[in-house]
Amino acid sequence: MSITCKNLSHIYGEKTPFEYYALKNVNLDIQEGSFTAIIGQTGSGKSTFIQHINALLLPTDGQITIDKYTISSKEKPEKLKQLRKKSGLVFQFPEYQLFEETIEKDIIFGPMNFGTSEEEAKEIAKKVIKMVGLDETYLQKSPFDLSGGQKRRIAIAGILAMDPDILVLDEPTAGLDPQGIREMMDLFKSIHQLGKTVILVTHDMNHVLEYCNEVIVMNEGCVERKGKVKDVFKDSDYLLNLGIDLPLITNMIIVLNKKGFQLDTSINNIDDLVEALGGELYG
Ligand code: ADP
Ligand code: MG
Image 1 (cartoon, rainbow, N blue to C red):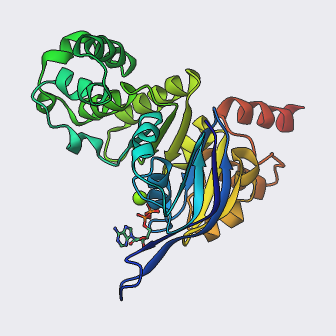
Image 2 (cartoon, rainbow, N blue to C red; image 1 turned 30 degrees about the vertical axis):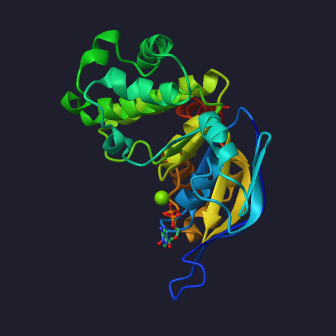
Image 3 (cartoon, rainbow, N blue to C red; image 1 turned 45 degrees about the vertical axis):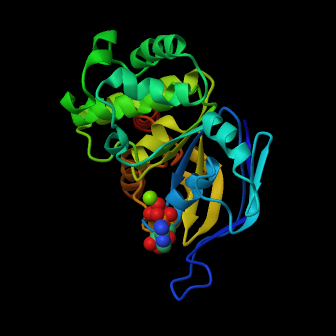
């Protein structure tokens, strides 16, 4: 399922004194099967944009096409239900949306809402709980007895239970401890490896460098740049000017290059950096 935006704009509070252009004429494609990062300062429009990917927000102007679903300001809601099944959105702090008394009930809610039988939905729950790294015994527990990271996994399992083709994640590691962050990122990597398109809003450029292949840079409601991670990250001055931190490795390379090395700034992992350093020192 690919995604195409044509002149997509979103205005909050249109025709009121609070009118605000949160997205301005966004044109882009997100390829099926990509692991795409969306980066940009707070307020740049990232959350507004991704809510269009499952039609939680509708365009004020222009359109967005997700597979065979084209959505414009006039789109009728009937078709949107099908789209929401295909395009799963995980909000920031999704654990706040858990509400059932058992984890199983929480997970089967979505599939049953789409007409899956209870029996079948329970089988799906067993499958997705394992996908998120928890075992079946959790299904009968209350979601409220779990740690923050585990609750978040349950919320993600609830989305995976719908078997979406696209998984959209809004700052999914915010507030987790370092181990929880790594486990969560590895979970998304494994979901991506299942062939799903993963779209990740994040402030962590190390994650972008390590996990993503494409990146979209947003600034003041516009898509400023889009491309392969290694190409966009080559222009470190550009990112710094936008107030975006550089990945740790890129920072190290810049420091080393100031000291006389001539390392390629597109190096994205420590092994390649060590090899390149070895080449310069001893090569
Ligand atoms: P980001 O996710 O990049 O931080 P958002 O998409 O949340 O940015 O917000 C973009 C801009 O739109 C911000 O200036 C924000 O204050 C504004 N905004 C977001 N949601 C609303 C809303 N529901 N009503 C009015 N303005 C909003
Ligand atoms: Mg946001």
